[in-house]
Length: 493
Image 1 (cartoon, rainbow, N blue to C red):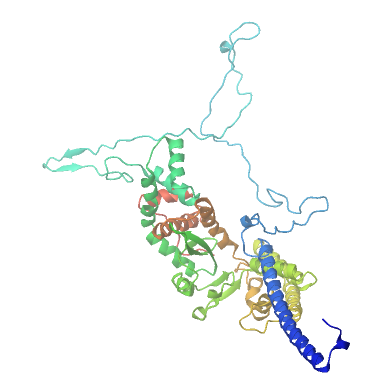
Image 2 (image 1 turned 90 degrees about the horizontal axis):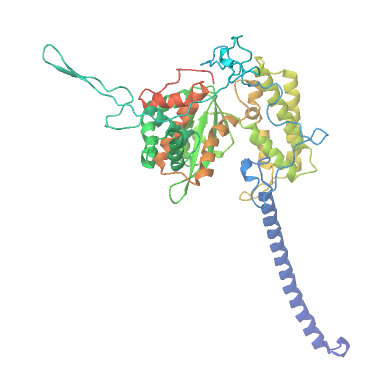
Protein backbone atom coordinates (compact mmCIF):
# COMPACT_ATOMS: atom_id res chain seq x y z
CA UNK A 1 0.00 0.00 0.00
CA UNK A 2 1.48 3.42 -0.94
CA UNK A 3 2.26 6.07 1.68
CA UNK A 4 -0.99 7.97 2.49
CA UNK A 5 0.91 11.29 2.31
CA UNK A 6 1.65 10.63 -1.34
CA UNK A 7 -2.01 9.94 -2.20
CA UNK A 8 -4.37 12.48 -3.61
CA UNK A 9 -7.60 13.43 -1.88
CA UNK A 10 -9.67 11.28 -4.24
CA UNK A 11 -7.39 8.31 -3.68
CA UNK A 12 -7.62 8.75 0.10
CA UNK A 13 -11.44 8.85 -0.06
CA UNK A 14 -11.48 5.68 -2.18
CA UNK A 15 -9.10 3.95 0.26
CA UNK A 16 -11.24 4.91 3.25
CA UNK A 17 -14.38 3.66 1.54
CA UNK A 18 -12.67 0.36 0.68
CA UNK A 19 -11.52 -0.05 4.27
CA UNK A 20 -15.03 0.73 5.54
CA UNK A 21 -16.43 -2.04 3.35
CA UNK A 22 -13.80 -4.44 4.65
CA UNK A 23 -14.52 -3.46 8.24
CA UNK A 24 -18.23 -4.05 7.69
CA UNK A 25 -17.49 -7.48 6.23
CA UNK A 26 -15.19 -8.30 9.15
CA UNK A 27 -17.80 -7.11 11.64
CA UNK A 28 -20.45 -9.31 10.07
CA UNK A 29 -18.04 -12.26 9.98
CA UNK A 30 -17.10 -11.63 13.63
CA UNK A 31 -20.75 -11.51 14.65
CA UNK A 32 -21.42 -14.75 12.78
CA UNK A 33 -18.46 -16.38 14.54
CA UNK A 34 -19.72 -15.16 17.90
CA UNK A 35 -23.17 -16.58 17.19
CA UNK A 36 -21.68 -19.87 16.06
CA UNK A 37 -19.42 -19.96 19.11
CA UNK A 38 -22.42 -19.36 21.41
CA UNK A 39 -24.35 -22.17 19.69
CA UNK A 40 -21.36 -24.50 19.99
CA UNK A 41 -20.99 -23.55 23.66
CA UNK A 42 -24.65 -24.39 24.24
CA UNK A 43 -24.24 -27.71 22.43
CA UNK A 44 -21.14 -28.48 24.46
CA UNK A 45 -22.96 -27.64 27.70
CA UNK A 46 -25.83 -29.93 26.69
CA UNK A 47 -23.42 -32.76 25.82
CA UNK A 48 -21.49 -32.34 29.06
CA UNK A 49 -24.78 -32.35 30.95
CA UNK A 50 -25.89 -35.52 29.19
CA UNK A 51 -22.58 -37.20 29.98
CA UNK A 52 -22.89 -36.14 33.62
CA UNK A 53 -26.27 -37.87 33.97
CA UNK A 54 -26.08 -40.98 36.12
CA UNK A 55 -28.14 -42.90 38.65
CA UNK A 56 -27.54 -40.30 41.38
CA UNK A 57 -28.86 -37.24 39.52
CA UNK A 58 -31.38 -38.67 37.05
CA UNK A 59 -33.74 -41.58 36.49
CA UNK A 60 -31.07 -43.59 34.67
CA UNK A 61 -30.50 -47.07 36.14
CA UNK A 62 -27.23 -47.84 37.97
CA UNK A 63 -26.30 -50.31 35.21
CA UNK A 64 -25.63 -47.36 32.85
CA UNK A 65 -23.08 -45.73 35.17
CA UNK A 66 -20.28 -47.81 33.66
CA UNK A 67 -21.00 -46.91 30.03
CA UNK A 68 -18.03 -45.36 28.12
CA UNK A 69 -17.78 -41.60 28.64
CA UNK A 70 -20.25 -41.55 31.50
CA UNK A 71 -19.52 -39.63 34.70
CA UNK A 72 -19.73 -42.01 37.62
CA UNK A 73 -21.70 -40.95 40.71
CA UNK A 74 -19.71 -39.33 43.48
CA UNK A 75 -18.43 -41.65 46.18
CA UNK A 76 -20.68 -42.04 49.18
CA UNK A 77 -19.75 -40.14 52.36
CA UNK A 78 -17.23 -41.96 54.55
CA UNK A 79 -17.12 -42.47 58.28
CA UNK A 80 -13.75 -40.73 58.59
CA UNK A 81 -11.78 -43.97 58.50
CA UNK A 82 -12.08 -44.63 54.80
CA UNK A 83 -15.23 -46.75 55.07
CA UNK A 84 -18.70 -45.83 53.90
CA UNK A 85 -21.35 -44.94 56.44
CA UNK A 86 -23.58 -47.73 55.16
CA UNK A 87 -21.96 -51.14 55.47
CA UNK A 88 -22.56 -53.88 52.97
CA UNK A 89 -24.77 -56.80 53.84
CA UNK A 90 -27.16 -56.87 56.76
CA UNK A 91 -27.94 -53.43 58.17
CA UNK A 92 -28.21 -52.70 61.92
CA UNK A 93 -31.74 -53.36 63.10
CA UNK A 94 -32.71 -55.40 60.05
CA UNK A 95 -34.19 -58.85 60.75
CA UNK A 96 -31.55 -61.54 60.51
CA UNK A 97 -31.66 -65.07 59.15
CA UNK A 98 -29.66 -68.11 60.16
CA UNK A 99 -29.69 -71.87 59.83
CA UNK A 100 -31.45 -72.93 63.01
CA UNK A 101 -31.44 -76.28 64.78
CA UNK A 102 -34.66 -78.25 64.27
CA UNK A 103 -36.26 -80.33 66.98
CA UNK A 104 -38.20 -82.37 64.40
CA UNK A 105 -35.79 -83.39 61.62
CA UNK A 106 -37.29 -85.14 58.62
CA UNK A 107 -34.97 -88.11 59.11
CA UNK A 108 -32.53 -89.27 61.79
CA UNK A 109 -29.69 -91.60 60.85
CA UNK A 110 -27.65 -93.33 63.58
CA UNK A 111 -23.91 -93.78 62.95
CA UNK A 112 -21.75 -96.19 64.95
CA UNK A 113 -17.96 -96.47 65.11
CA UNK A 114 -16.49 -98.98 62.68
CA UNK A 115 -13.30 -101.00 62.72
CA UNK A 116 -11.36 -102.36 65.68
CA UNK A 117 -10.22 -100.97 69.01
CA UNK A 118 -6.58 -100.65 69.91
CA UNK A 119 -6.97 -103.83 71.91
CA UNK A 120 -8.05 -105.70 68.81
CA UNK A 121 -11.77 -106.01 69.66
CA UNK A 122 -14.39 -105.37 67.01
CA UNK A 123 -16.19 -102.06 67.72
CA UNK A 124 -19.45 -103.57 66.47
CA UNK A 125 -19.53 -105.60 69.70
CA UNK A 126 -19.09 -102.55 71.92
CA UNK A 127 -21.73 -101.26 74.39
CA UNK A 128 -23.98 -98.51 72.99
CA UNK A 129 -23.50 -95.41 75.18
CA UNK A 130 -25.99 -93.24 73.31
CA UNK A 131 -25.56 -90.17 71.13
CA UNK A 132 -22.30 -88.32 71.66
CA UNK A 133 -22.81 -85.54 69.10
CA UNK A 134 -25.42 -84.64 66.51
CA UNK A 135 -25.14 -82.78 63.21
CA UNK A 136 -28.07 -81.59 61.13
CA UNK A 137 -27.61 -81.06 57.42
CA UNK A 138 -30.17 -79.41 55.14
CA UNK A 139 -30.05 -80.99 51.69
CA UNK A 140 -32.19 -81.43 48.61
CA UNK A 141 -32.61 -84.88 47.09
CA UNK A 142 -31.12 -85.67 43.74
CA UNK A 143 -33.98 -85.18 41.30
CA UNK A 144 -34.93 -87.33 38.38
CA UNK A 145 -38.06 -87.09 36.27
CA UNK A 146 -40.21 -90.16 36.74
CA UNK A 147 -42.65 -91.65 34.27
CA UNK A 148 -45.99 -92.61 35.80
CA UNK A 149 -48.50 -94.58 33.78
CA UNK A 150 -52.14 -93.90 34.62
CA UNK A 151 -54.32 -96.87 33.66
CA UNK A 152 -57.95 -95.83 33.47
CA UNK A 153 -59.71 -99.05 34.30
CA UNK A 154 -63.20 -99.90 33.10
CA UNK A 155 -65.88 -101.75 35.03
CA UNK A 156 -69.23 -103.18 34.02
CA UNK A 157 -72.17 -102.62 36.29
CA UNK A 158 -74.65 -105.40 36.99
CA UNK A 159 -77.10 -103.54 34.75
CA UNK A 160 -74.71 -103.95 31.86
CA UNK A 161 -73.41 -100.35 31.67
CA UNK A 162 -69.64 -99.77 31.37
CA UNK A 163 -67.83 -97.04 33.36
CA UNK A 164 -64.26 -95.78 32.76
CA UNK A 165 -62.24 -94.02 35.49
CA UNK A 166 -61.81 -90.26 35.22
CA UNK A 167 -58.44 -88.91 34.15
CA UNK A 168 -56.65 -87.48 37.25
CA UNK A 169 -56.16 -83.71 37.56
CA UNK A 170 -53.03 -82.55 35.80
CA UNK A 171 -52.86 -85.50 33.42
CA UNK A 172 -53.20 -84.33 29.81
CA UNK A 173 -55.51 -85.96 27.31
CA UNK A 174 -52.50 -86.92 25.17
CA UNK A 175 -51.10 -90.41 25.59
CA UNK A 176 -47.72 -89.03 26.72
CA UNK A 177 -47.24 -85.66 28.41
CA UNK A 178 -45.24 -83.72 30.99
CA UNK A 179 -46.80 -83.14 34.40
CA UNK A 180 -47.78 -79.86 36.08
CA UNK A 181 -44.72 -79.77 38.33
CA UNK A 182 -42.31 -79.79 35.40
CA UNK A 183 -44.47 -77.26 33.55
CA UNK A 184 -44.46 -74.96 36.58
CA UNK A 185 -40.67 -75.27 36.75
CA UNK A 186 -40.31 -74.13 33.14
CA UNK A 187 -42.67 -71.18 33.48
CA UNK A 188 -41.05 -70.16 36.76
CA UNK A 189 -37.57 -70.16 35.24
CA UNK A 190 -38.60 -68.23 32.14
CA UNK A 191 -40.92 -65.63 33.68
CA UNK A 192 -39.62 -65.10 37.22
CA UNK A 193 -35.90 -65.57 36.59
CA UNK A 194 -35.66 -64.44 32.94
CA UNK A 195 -34.05 -67.70 31.80
CA UNK A 196 -34.11 -67.92 27.96
CA UNK A 197 -35.99 -70.85 26.46
CA UNK A 198 -32.91 -72.77 25.30
CA UNK A 199 -31.20 -72.41 28.66
CA UNK A 200 -34.43 -73.38 30.43
CA UNK A 201 -34.52 -76.63 28.41
CA UNK A 202 -30.88 -77.26 29.27
CA UNK A 203 -31.38 -76.51 32.96
CA UNK A 204 -34.46 -78.71 33.29
CA UNK A 205 -32.62 -81.50 31.51
CA UNK A 206 -29.62 -81.21 33.83
CA UNK A 207 -31.73 -81.19 36.99
CA UNK A 208 -34.36 -83.77 36.14
CA UNK A 209 -33.19 -85.81 33.16
CA UNK A 210 -36.29 -84.78 31.18
CA UNK A 211 -35.79 -83.54 27.63
CA UNK A 212 -38.69 -81.26 26.63
CA UNK A 213 -38.47 -79.47 23.29
CA UNK A 214 -37.81 -75.73 23.11
CA UNK A 215 -41.09 -75.18 21.25
CA UNK A 216 -43.12 -76.96 23.92
CA UNK A 217 -41.40 -75.03 26.70
CA UNK A 218 -42.03 -71.71 24.97
CA UNK A 219 -45.70 -72.55 24.41
CA UNK A 220 -46.20 -72.88 28.17
CA UNK A 221 -46.13 -69.10 28.59
CA UNK A 222 -49.27 -68.43 26.54
CA UNK A 223 -51.00 -71.58 27.80
CA UNK A 224 -50.44 -70.60 31.43
CA UNK A 225 -51.45 -66.98 30.81
CA UNK A 226 -54.75 -68.17 29.32
CA UNK A 227 -55.59 -69.69 32.71
CA UNK A 228 -55.06 -66.32 34.42
CA UNK A 229 -57.43 -64.02 32.52
CA UNK A 230 -59.93 -63.83 35.38
CA UNK A 231 -57.25 -63.40 38.05
CA UNK A 232 -55.55 -60.67 35.98
CA UNK A 233 -58.82 -58.71 35.77
CA UNK A 234 -59.36 -59.20 39.50
CA UNK A 235 -55.91 -57.82 40.34
CA UNK A 236 -56.55 -54.78 38.18
CA UNK A 237 -59.87 -54.14 39.92
CA UNK A 238 -58.28 -54.43 43.36
CA UNK A 239 -55.59 -51.93 42.34
CA UNK A 240 -58.21 -49.42 41.25
CA UNK A 241 -59.72 -49.66 44.75
CA UNK A 242 -56.40 -49.31 46.59
CA UNK A 243 -55.75 -46.28 48.79
CA UNK A 244 -52.39 -45.48 47.15
CA UNK A 245 -50.93 -46.89 43.92
CA UNK A 246 -47.35 -46.61 42.63
CA UNK A 247 -47.00 -46.24 38.86
CA UNK A 248 -43.98 -46.33 36.58
CA UNK A 249 -43.05 -47.33 33.04
CA UNK A 250 -39.97 -48.63 31.26
CA UNK A 251 -39.06 -48.93 27.57
CA UNK A 252 -38.72 -52.40 26.09
CA UNK A 253 -37.73 -53.57 22.60
CA UNK A 254 -40.21 -55.85 20.90
CA UNK A 255 -39.94 -58.21 17.94
CA UNK A 256 -37.29 -58.87 15.31
CA UNK A 257 -36.97 -55.17 14.47
CA UNK A 258 -36.69 -54.21 18.13
CA UNK A 259 -39.63 -51.81 17.99
CA UNK A 260 -39.68 -49.52 21.02
CA UNK A 261 -42.64 -50.08 23.32
CA UNK A 262 -43.33 -49.21 26.96
CA UNK A 263 -44.37 -51.39 29.86
CA UNK A 264 -46.31 -49.47 32.54
CA UNK A 265 -46.93 -51.01 35.96
CA UNK A 266 -49.45 -50.17 38.67
CA UNK A 267 -48.75 -51.75 42.04
CA UNK A 268 -49.04 -51.65 45.79
CA UNK A 269 -47.40 -53.69 48.50
CA UNK A 270 -50.06 -56.34 47.81
CA UNK A 271 -50.77 -56.26 44.07
CA UNK A 272 -48.92 -55.95 40.76
CA UNK A 273 -50.45 -55.30 37.33
CA UNK A 274 -48.68 -54.72 34.00
CA UNK A 275 -49.85 -53.25 30.70
CA UNK A 276 -48.06 -53.12 27.33
CA UNK A 277 -48.24 -50.06 25.11
CA UNK A 278 -46.35 -46.82 24.54
CA UNK A 279 -46.08 -43.47 26.31
CA UNK A 280 -49.10 -41.99 24.55
CA UNK A 281 -52.21 -40.74 26.28
CA UNK A 282 -54.20 -43.56 24.66
CA UNK A 283 -52.02 -46.16 26.40
CA UNK A 284 -52.47 -44.45 29.76
CA UNK A 285 -56.23 -44.54 29.23
CA UNK A 286 -56.09 -48.26 28.40
CA UNK A 287 -53.83 -48.66 31.41
CA UNK A 288 -56.79 -47.61 33.52
CA UNK A 289 -55.16 -44.55 35.05
CA UNK A 290 -58.45 -42.68 35.12
CA UNK A 291 -60.10 -45.53 37.03
CA UNK A 292 -57.80 -45.27 40.06
CA UNK A 293 -59.64 -44.06 43.14
CA UNK A 294 -56.64 -43.54 45.43
CA UNK A 295 -53.46 -41.47 45.46
CA UNK A 296 -51.17 -42.06 42.47
CA UNK A 297 -47.42 -42.00 43.17
CA UNK A 298 -45.54 -41.30 39.92
CA UNK A 299 -42.44 -39.82 38.30
CA UNK A 300 -44.12 -36.62 37.00
CA UNK A 301 -44.36 -37.82 33.41
CA UNK A 302 -46.70 -35.37 31.65
CA UNK A 303 -49.49 -37.89 30.96
CA UNK A 304 -50.21 -38.25 34.67
CA UNK A 305 -51.22 -34.58 34.69
CA UNK A 306 -53.32 -34.71 31.52
CA UNK A 307 -56.68 -32.95 31.68
CA UNK A 308 -58.49 -36.22 31.03
CA UNK A 309 -57.18 -37.46 34.40
CA UNK A 310 -58.17 -34.32 36.29
CA UNK A 311 -59.67 -36.35 39.13
CA UNK A 312 -56.40 -38.00 40.15
CA UNK A 313 -54.81 -37.25 43.49
CA UNK A 314 -51.04 -36.99 43.03
CA UNK A 315 -47.90 -37.77 45.00
CA UNK A 316 -44.81 -36.98 42.88
CA UNK A 317 -42.04 -39.48 43.57
CA UNK A 318 -39.61 -37.92 46.06
CA UNK A 319 -36.78 -40.18 44.91
CA UNK A 320 -36.98 -38.56 41.47
CA UNK A 321 -37.13 -35.11 43.07
CA UNK A 322 -34.01 -35.85 45.13
CA UNK A 323 -32.14 -36.95 42.01
CA UNK A 324 -33.22 -33.75 40.26
CA UNK A 325 -31.96 -31.75 43.24
CA UNK A 326 -28.63 -33.58 43.06
CA UNK A 327 -28.42 -32.57 39.39
CA UNK A 328 -29.20 -28.96 40.32
CA UNK A 329 -26.46 -29.02 42.97
CA UNK A 330 -23.96 -30.09 40.30
CA UNK A 331 -25.16 -27.40 37.88
CA UNK A 332 -25.03 -24.65 40.52
CA UNK A 333 -22.18 -25.67 42.87
CA UNK A 334 -22.23 -22.28 44.68
CA UNK A 335 -25.96 -22.45 45.45
CA UNK A 336 -27.27 -23.64 48.82
CA UNK A 337 -30.95 -24.14 47.92
CA UNK A 338 -30.59 -27.63 46.32
CA UNK A 339 -29.02 -29.11 49.46
CA UNK A 340 -31.45 -27.27 51.75
CA UNK A 341 -34.52 -28.61 49.94
CA UNK A 342 -33.02 -32.12 49.65
CA UNK A 343 -32.15 -32.29 53.37
CA UNK A 344 -35.64 -31.16 54.37
CA UNK A 345 -37.26 -33.69 52.04
CA UNK A 346 -35.07 -36.53 53.33
CA UNK A 347 -35.92 -35.58 56.91
CA UNK A 348 -39.64 -35.72 56.13
CA UNK A 349 -39.31 -39.10 54.40
CA UNK A 350 -37.36 -40.54 57.33
CA UNK A 351 -39.84 -39.16 59.84
CA UNK A 352 -42.81 -40.56 57.91
CA UNK A 353 -41.22 -44.00 57.58
CA UNK A 354 -40.28 -44.05 61.26
CA UNK A 355 -43.77 -43.02 62.37
CA UNK A 356 -45.38 -45.61 60.09
CA UNK A 357 -43.15 -48.39 61.40
CA UNK A 358 -43.94 -47.37 64.98
CA UNK A 359 -47.68 -47.42 64.31
CA UNK A 360 -48.05 -43.69 64.97
CA UNK A 361 -50.90 -41.77 63.30
CA UNK A 362 -48.66 -38.93 62.04
CA UNK A 363 -45.26 -37.32 62.31
CA UNK A 364 -44.52 -34.50 64.75
CA UNK A 365 -46.30 -31.34 63.44
CA UNK A 366 -43.57 -28.92 64.60
CA UNK A 367 -40.88 -31.03 62.93
CA UNK A 368 -42.94 -31.18 59.75
CA UNK A 369 -43.65 -27.45 59.68
CA UNK A 370 -39.98 -26.59 60.16
CA UNK A 371 -38.96 -28.75 57.18
CA UNK A 372 -41.75 -27.29 55.06
CA UNK A 373 -40.38 -23.83 55.83
CA UNK A 374 -36.94 -24.97 54.65
CA UNK A 375 -38.43 -26.23 51.40
CA UNK A 376 -40.44 -23.05 50.79
CA UNK A 377 -37.51 -20.71 51.51
CA UNK A 378 -35.12 -22.81 49.43
CA UNK A 379 -37.59 -22.79 46.54
CA UNK A 380 -37.99 -19.02 46.74
CA UNK A 381 -34.21 -18.52 46.69
CA UNK A 382 -33.83 -20.91 43.77
CA UNK A 383 -36.52 -19.15 41.73
CA UNK A 384 -34.74 -15.82 42.34
CA UNK A 385 -31.36 -17.24 41.26
CA UNK A 386 -32.43 -19.33 38.24
CA UNK A 387 -34.13 -17.07 35.73
CA UNK A 388 -36.82 -18.46 33.45
CA UNK A 389 -36.07 -18.64 29.73
CA UNK A 390 -38.56 -16.18 28.16
CA UNK A 391 -38.54 -18.06 24.85
CA UNK A 392 -41.69 -20.26 24.92
CA UNK A 393 -40.00 -22.72 22.57
CA UNK A 394 -36.69 -22.71 24.37
CA UNK A 395 -35.50 -25.16 26.99
CA UNK A 396 -35.57 -24.01 30.60
CA UNK A 397 -32.32 -23.81 32.63
CA UNK A 398 -31.51 -26.83 34.81
CA UNK A 399 -33.67 -26.89 37.92
CA UNK A 400 -36.10 -24.19 36.82
CA UNK A 401 -38.99 -26.57 36.07
CA UNK A 402 -38.28 -28.44 39.31
CA UNK A 403 -38.43 -25.21 41.32
CA UNK A 404 -41.69 -24.18 39.67
CA UNK A 405 -43.16 -27.59 40.44
CA UNK A 406 -42.08 -27.32 44.10
CA UNK A 407 -43.66 -23.86 44.27
CA UNK A 408 -46.91 -24.72 42.49
CA UNK A 409 -47.46 -28.28 43.78
CA UNK A 410 -45.93 -28.36 47.23
CA UNK A 411 -49.13 -29.88 48.68
CA UNK A 412 -48.75 -32.84 46.30
CA UNK A 413 -45.00 -33.18 46.95
CA UNK A 414 -45.40 -33.43 50.75
CA UNK A 415 -48.71 -35.28 50.80
CA UNK A 416 -46.94 -38.28 52.37
CA UNK A 417 -45.93 -36.11 55.34
CA UNK A 418 -49.60 -35.49 56.19
CA UNK A 419 -50.95 -38.96 55.30
CA UNK A 420 -48.84 -41.94 56.32
CA UNK A 421 -50.91 -44.18 54.05
CA UNK A 422 -49.21 -42.58 51.04
CA UNK A 423 -45.68 -43.75 50.19
CA UNK A 424 -43.20 -40.93 49.45
CA UNK A 425 -41.63 -42.70 46.47
CA UNK A 426 -42.62 -44.96 43.59
CA UNK A 427 -39.79 -47.36 44.48
CA UNK A 428 -42.26 -50.24 44.68
CA UNK A 429 -43.11 -49.72 41.00
CA UNK A 430 -39.43 -49.53 40.07
CA UNK A 431 -38.80 -52.81 41.89
CA UNK A 432 -41.70 -54.46 40.08
CA UNK A 433 -40.33 -53.23 36.73
CA UNK A 434 -36.79 -54.43 37.39
CA UNK A 435 -37.48 -57.97 36.05
CA UNK A 436 -38.41 -56.45 32.67
CA UNK A 437 -35.09 -54.61 32.54
CA UNK A 438 -33.25 -57.77 33.56
CA UNK A 439 -35.03 -59.78 30.87
CA UNK A 440 -34.11 -57.23 28.21
CA UNK A 441 -30.46 -57.07 29.27
CA UNK A 442 -30.28 -60.85 28.93
CA UNK A 443 -32.06 -61.26 25.60
CA UNK A 444 -31.61 -57.83 23.98
CA UNK A 445 -35.28 -57.84 22.97
CA UNK A 446 -38.52 -59.59 23.73
CA UNK A 447 -40.68 -61.80 21.52
CA UNK A 448 -43.94 -60.73 19.77
CA UNK A 449 -46.45 -58.70 21.71
CA UNK A 450 -48.82 -61.62 22.31
CA UNK A 451 -46.10 -63.48 24.18
CA UNK A 452 -45.03 -60.34 26.05
CA UNK A 453 -48.57 -59.73 27.26
CA UNK A 454 -48.78 -63.36 28.36
CA UNK A 455 -45.42 -63.14 30.12
CA UNK A 456 -46.38 -60.09 32.16
CA UNK A 457 -49.82 -61.39 32.99
CA UNK A 458 -48.02 -64.33 34.61
CA UNK A 459 -45.47 -62.01 36.17
CA UNK A 460 -48.21 -59.88 37.75
CA UNK A 461 -49.91 -63.02 39.08
CA UNK A 462 -46.82 -64.53 40.72
CA UNK A 463 -45.70 -61.12 42.05
CA UNK A 464 -49.10 -60.60 43.67
CA UNK A 465 -49.03 -64.13 45.08
CA UNK A 466 -45.55 -63.57 46.52
CA UNK A 467 -46.68 -60.29 48.11
CA UNK A 468 -49.39 -62.30 49.89
CA UNK A 469 -46.79 -64.76 51.23
CA UNK A 470 -47.48 -67.60 48.78
CA UNK A 471 -44.90 -69.82 47.14
CA UNK A 472 -44.59 -68.77 43.50
CA UNK A 473 -44.03 -72.30 42.20
CA UNK A 474 -47.11 -73.55 44.00
CA UNK A 475 -49.15 -70.66 42.61
CA UNK A 476 -47.97 -71.49 39.09
CA UNK A 477 -48.81 -75.17 39.54
CA UNK A 478 -52.34 -74.25 40.64
CA UNK A 479 -52.73 -72.06 37.55
CA UNK A 480 -51.52 -74.83 35.25
CA UNK A 481 -54.02 -77.20 36.86
CA UNK A 482 -56.77 -74.72 35.99
CA UNK A 483 -57.38 -73.59 39.58
CA UNK A 484 -55.28 -70.42 40.00
CA UNK A 485 -54.96 -68.69 43.33
CA UNK A 486 -57.15 -65.59 43.63
CA UNK A 487 -56.26 -62.62 45.86
CA UNK A 488 -58.76 -61.81 48.62
CA UNK A 489 -61.48 -59.25 48.01
CA UNK A 490 -59.77 -56.38 49.76
CA UNK A 491 -56.45 -55.97 51.54
CA UNK A 492 -54.65 -52.92 52.89
CA UNK A 493 -52.43 -51.15 50.35
